[in-house]
Amino acid sequence: MSKIEDEFDDINIDNHKDSVEKDHEDYEEICYLCRRPESKVGKMIHIPNQITICSDCMQKTFDTINKGDNPYMNMMGFSPSMLNMSNLQNDIPKTQKLKKKKSEEEKAEEEVFDRRNIPSPHVIKGRLDEFIIGQEHAKKVISVGVYNHYKRIGNGLDPDVEIEKSNMLMIGPTGSGKTYLVKTLAKLLNVPLAITDATSLTEAGYIGDDVESVISKLLLAAGNDVEKAERGIVFIDEIDKIAKKRNTNSRDVSGESVQQGLLKLLEGSDVEVPVGASSKNAMVPLTTVNTQNILFICGGAFPDLDKVIKARLNKQTSIGFQADLKDKYDEDLNVLQKVNLDDLREYGMIPEFLGRLPIMYSLEGLSKEMLVQVLKEPKNAILKQYQKLLAMDEVDLEFSPDALEAIAEKAMEKKTGARALRAILEDIMLDIMYEIPKDDNIGRVVITREYIEGKGVPTIEMRGIGKHKLLAAGN
Image (cartoon, rainbow, N blue to C red; front, top):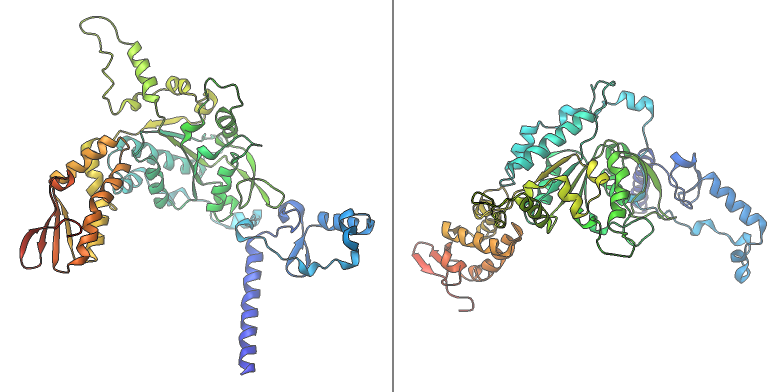
């Protein structure tokens, strides 16, 4: 029996060695003390327990030990002979291991990034149409922008003509689908994508994330492969939250300062970022990422920007029988589509920041008809999700056309766009999802407008009997 156990132990040891060797081939070694990768400090020195130390740190350690006057080592009678390296453990997490950079010969042998692997704009838009209702202009702009970006960094370009990067600024009311548009795009493209929130960014040296943390998230999404991250996409949401603060005497560490810090990222530069962490410290390895070929998409709801736009448009009104009325734009859901650079500067975005986002477009506010489409037409529509849940109980769920309109009207009152639909349906479906499992004879449930408005109950159909009214909850 012990012989069999020994054979299994040998197999486990061999598998562990193979795993360690493969890990060594794919990732750079990190100094245990200073956390710098071997590409920065050169060949590592290996000591027991799989600990690697760079020559600089090893020399400093020997110098400290040889001096013998270190107050920390002399405390409690500690002597150099008592130093036991076996107590140290290689605790570098997987997220802080850095992919090795390929040599020039390996790069030449590998196939260059091929833009033909990126779908054409009409294909990208067609896939977006399956999940996102309306927003035709926005989907067309982002499809063309992404496609042109990867043509720019792909092979076969004329070296004499340098195509500049076209970052994007996406403006739209809350609940119009800005973040969902980018998340859906991420599923279609086989490139690393990082989604971050501008509200957590602050000027370097203050509590919060530095602007370099945006690139750290992209590097993590690329599996700590620098070359792969350098052709990824970064979506910075809530970009309106870093607008310049007005009437303040304190330092604007989360407004204009963050815009200034993002300039070098948007333009394209070499940035030293922490690996596997959001801030630089002595225990985290650092690497250099070039942002020249990273596409940045910034999005925000820009609350009260409509007031700035209306004020500019109302200045153009004249006096007379054919003059425009002052309240002409008050009920316009798509007033944000009339935005220009002057409006954004008035809002608090600095000109240097806007100049690095040459593609600017707005999303439409969702009308009642569009909300009804959002409920039932996308591949993962909310109604389809509830129908799938009840289908697991062998019950058909239907919504009358009037019920869908009633739900859309309730969502319009909340003024939070498509986000309101989920909350409304959760409230409507609570009693139904509670009562249905009580009776196995229920075959179909029809939601009516009266039930949505609180004036009636759903219509149910029993298996082989006919239509009845669903009893109120608790009866």
